Length: 160
Ligand code: ADP
Image (cartoon, rainbow, N blue to C red; front, side):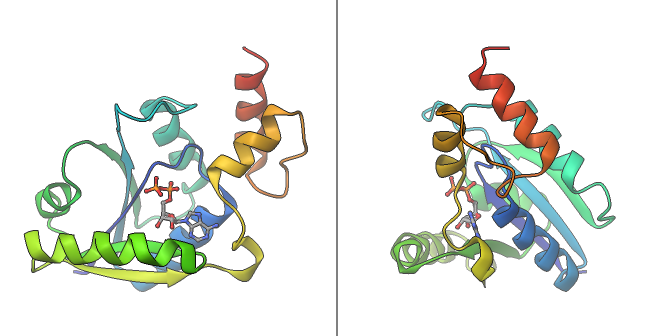
């Protein structure tokens, strides 16, 4: 069985992430979306909130599972008997970091390979940070995230 892990912060999940999830789930037998519980960053949403939002938008995809992880990504990959890491590539600016990350992971876990899916052109500009910045100033984010997620982002900035 081809099992892959798609890791990220997903703070919060955007249509760009969602596009990668749908496409990766159609080429893999099982896809684990892995939400990084990173204490050094200060995310807008807690790891539980990020996991729940991902569960909500992927509930129609039977071979997709959402989990959180901390520590080394390759350890999580091994614990879940996966051999593939999925990453999305938007522009050349992503490339250098992603190349370094995948080569480092190959040194520490040679049996794990990274597969890159290039972004859907519609979402090549899109990032969670941009969405948060627009929302912070009260802008319309409906083109970037699912309606339920947009409501949650607005509520965060309204201090609810
Ligand atoms: P990280 O904090 O690890 O960069 P993100 O949550 O920002 O995590 O992104 C997770 C993965 O999704 C990364 O591989 C990133 O390149 C990819 N990604 C993010 N936004 C998009 C997008 N709009 N189109 C395609 N891939 C994307």
